[in-house]
Length: 278
Length: 296
Image (cartoon, rainbow over all chains, first blue to last red; front, top):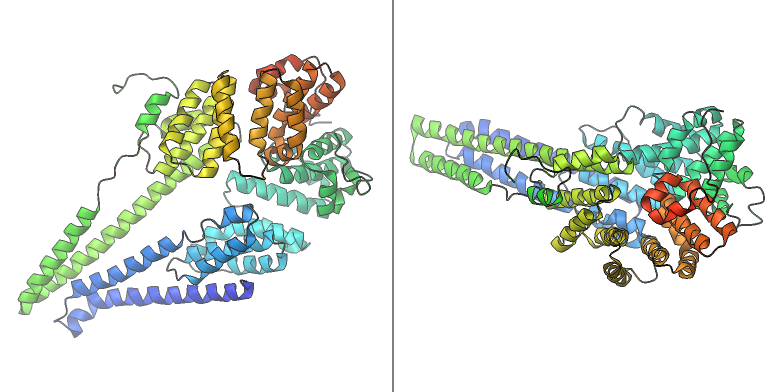
């Protein structure tokens, strides 16, 4: 089984190694043009530079090929095949890659896997590692999905300052539609915990329309949280409408089990787990 | 089609032809030419001594540097173009999710009017084209796109299964019942054992309602109720609406009312009628669940 701390240190080491190798190749290229004609005029500088270029190209090609190694991981996680996903991640992490973003993306897949396995503390540790400031654009390339995952994981750990930190980093970003949906789900969950009912019901129909694009379980939870906020804001009509919709998308007992704050929407849910509001 | 000739919006045969990726001009020859120049300079430099040798040595170094610079610039430009095309197709997908059909159609018309950069992106755009055509109720055109995609074997099994579901639905909407029945049989064979496919259940439910097998439709719904809810989310409104139609046909108004209320809780009546004309009979007969007004 893949040890999370081990995986983090392996990625750190590989990133440092990749950085050093790039520096060496760059220095060798410069030396071929500047130093070789002076120190060893009998050596052809063009061919020396060509040799360096070939090494760089071969390593880059292998790294790019290696980026496909963990390509099946998302579908394996989605299908619940966690062991197979872990094996693929382990194999991908063992491969050397000159491309930093490939390593970071594989580590991100590990965070997603740990989240799916409900090993939230390990997932949070990986997210923190990925969000560490780094030189270059590699870190920025994975920052948005990592922040969204960090928000989700921190909600599971009930670490509200970490949720706030992760969400705050996303507000100025240009997000894809799927990222907007994930952000909305995390934001509603967070606001419900701090009792920001007014903020939750602000432009409520826009939020409801967005929740309709989510997968069933997320849509149900988001609408149940909005129902709670509507009730707290004195909008009983909205509360009932949203609660009944949520009950058509998920079993209320499941919703309450995952988020006990929702128990008020379905009094007596625990006694009647089959109650579906239909 | 001659250039400048006005063509129909989302002209399927034209778009299928125009979007075919062109065989890219081989850059290998350029690279080999560059290598040849380097080798030529290096050979000449090796045979010379003194100032001429040094000049040739420097020139061969410059040639390699130029070759590498050119290669990097070419790679960066290629990556940028592929990324832009990928973003264009992704944004079409988002427009469809947001139900911005006219914009999605216009973007697809523009994107598919010129050769695509990769077969994968073209296949994705064609999947979206099929969805837009089905939305505009151009089911025969949608079937042409689906058949083209399935014949080309460009999709991975999961996507191909989803496409086959859309194709069977288009057949049902066009009353090609024999073809639809064959397509359903094919889907049943392709479904992974032990997994209840909500898409397939919805198709069978619609087929039963369309052919007047209302009791079977109700039984089908009850068997797949959880899968329909978990896999279709808000689109499970379709199943509730068809269930309401089945109860209505069997003159069981109380159950029809409850199912219709559930359907309209998840989707407005006008949308359900648009998707399934058979449901129009329920409009006015049963009370829908309206969304409350936003302002109190």
